[in-house]
Length: 126
Image 1 (tube, rainbow, N blue to C red):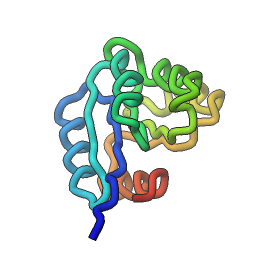
Image 2 (cartoon, rainbow, N blue to C red):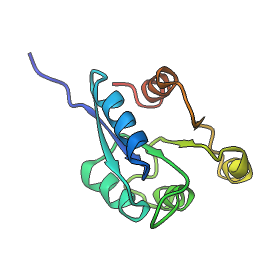
Image 3 (cartoon, rainbow, N blue to C red):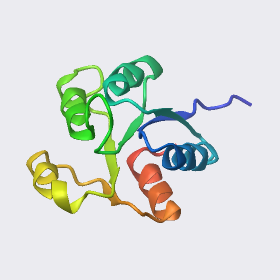
Image 4 (cartoon, helix red, strand yellow):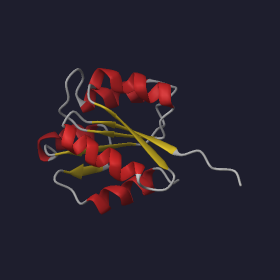
C-alpha cells in the first residue's frame, strides 16, 4: 500500500515550550509533519524549502514579526496561496492589522490544543 505524503506545517514561534507543544501535537496527528522556525526572517525560506502546506505564526518573533512574514508570504508567488494561521497572546492589540489583511484564522493564547488541531485539519486537510 502506498503511503500518502504528509502535510507539512511550518510553525513560526520563538517561545520554545509553545513551539515544542505545537510541533509535537501536530506531528502526532496522522498525515501531518511539523517544523519549528524560531526566527521570523528564516520562516519564508523554510516554507519554500520544505514546500509547506500550512504556516502557523506568532506575532512577536525575532527577525521579522509574524505580520511582516505574512506580508512577504502573500507577495511571493510560489507560496502566496498557502493558508496561514496566527497564534498569539496579543490578538486584540493587532485586531486592526488582521482586519486590514483579511486574516481570519487567529487563535488566542492560551488556546485549547483540540481547537488548534481542528483548525489545522480544517485549513489543511490531510
